Image 1: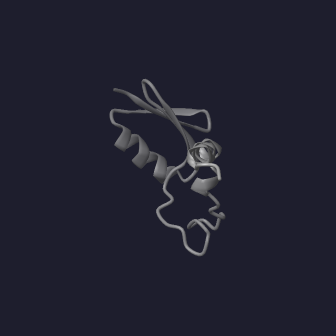
Image 2: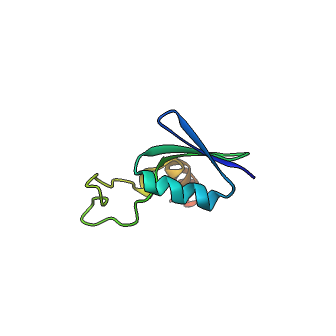
Image 3: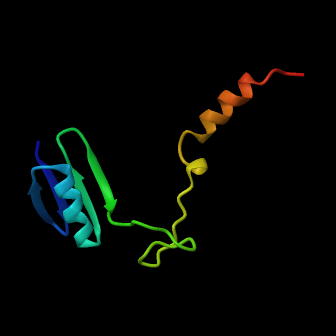
Length: 84
C-alpha cells in the first residue's frame, strides 16, 4: 500500500501509514495523508493538552458530546424511556 503526504503543493510517498504520520508530525503544519481507500487531514503531533491548550498555544475545544451522532443518541434515549 502506498501513502501520500500532501502539503504546500508538495507530495511525498511512503510505504506505511506510520511513516507518513511520523513525517507529518515533523512538518508541524496542516497536511493531507491519502491512502488507497481513505484520506486524513489535519495537523499531526499534538501529544498533550494542558490548561485547555495544545503545545503550540492553540485552544483545544474538541468535545465528544458536541460531535455528530449526539442528536441521534439523545433521540434513541428519549424513545427508550417509558412515558409516565
